[in-house]
Image (cartoon, rainbow, N blue to C red; front, side, top):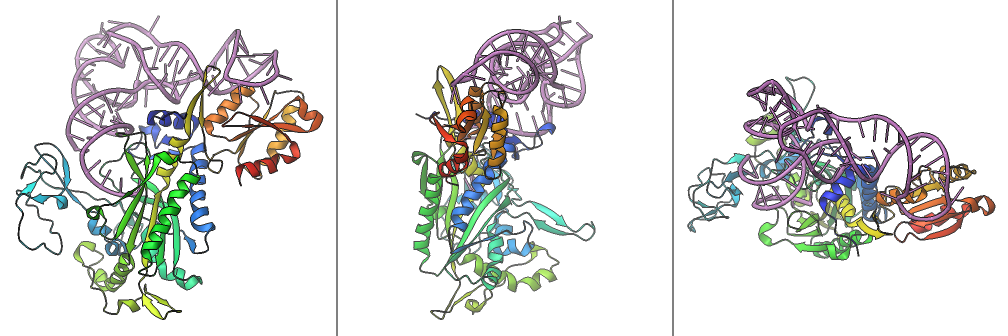
Length: 485
RNA sequence: GCGGGCGUAGCUCAGUGGUAGAGCGUCACGUUGCCAACGUGAAUGUCGUGAGUUCAAGUCUCAUCGCCCGCUCCA
């Protein structure tokens, strides 16, 4: 029975073995930023590759993309981030609870028609605290810049303010036309991208779970309106199964459907894939969101393109411009699609599975962590899926003499061309096995006295600790099969 | 941002005003023939950072940075 991991155990293992360090640690650390060490860099890259393999490589209807992090500021005007990502927040003086101003309810139900645009009124005297029920006990609303800003242009007198992207998705929408024009792909199809995004979160959380700089793996899958609901189901299942396939235990994974009132402004439906992380109140936490973004984004960008003159005239001040209304024949716009077979024009609907690479990596770490008693000693190990394991095999001479190191080194030099392998001849072999267990290495190959006589070695398996004798010439093939690589 | 807890060796931690420690880990040599063996030896600390109180601060005070828990939000 696997032991329940505590987050503290994971954090200290990560530091000790070189998976994850705090950023800028020698300077006291930088809040919410973390670095991946030698083993962590391998693990994270394997997580990325596993995602790419299933979402892009193994599908004929998805292509990849790798956009710049810096994009034209109008992208964020059109997407809604420039406005929606500037929430006003206030604190209840009575109970100290923090609330978003636009989420507060009036104390008396008003019969006045709901304004089309939610006004950013500073008058909170009639608002109710959702936590304690106090009316009008709010402090001065605080503004938050949820997007990171930076400047482009070396000349300080002539710079343009840009945003670090808060999601990778907009780069995909912005390249929708390019991909259509430069490939022969047709709807339904998807564009996938893995990359860094940045959000100035009000609060960060739990190690690498919520950081302000994070890595996303996003797919925007474009489909014909009316087929969106079945594609939504398709990707829901695909993505859930992906986590299971790479070793997440079934009992720690679930779906959570979003309620209508918690849906983002662009979404028609959204479901989260949640993992039972060992922090907080032991609550389920989101690994990935799968949303039906409808045709919102592509249509917004068509409005954005139409607004460019206003942008120039206002010298790039996003706060002074409003997106122009959609053209009446928006179905002929640059981001609309013409289906040659049915002779129909439409703006595709988008199904978006959006996964957090850092979160997945943490989940795989937590789920793989195990402690067990062996001969009255504790054995710590990471039961990684072989594809995710940072090191695929350790190669050891049983002892450091009698020609064993030479044979082992030859095996290592051969294997390293195909797998990430690690050579070790220090200390007793049992200790070396345990060291590899803690790094999650699935196999260890040991050269012993018999190896010189019959050219065989032992292959020891991480999870069962069982050993098999394999001919040296067969080691590579044996690992290939076992690792499924 | 608010409230609570915490910060001493790579990791886990002891140290309540008087010479900075232990276990594990790491390294070297010897030994060792399959699961964290043993022996000998070694390296490793701005006691998170900065001020203050004191003859004397890891220890007391203040500030600051960072981590964990809660509020809130999200990939």
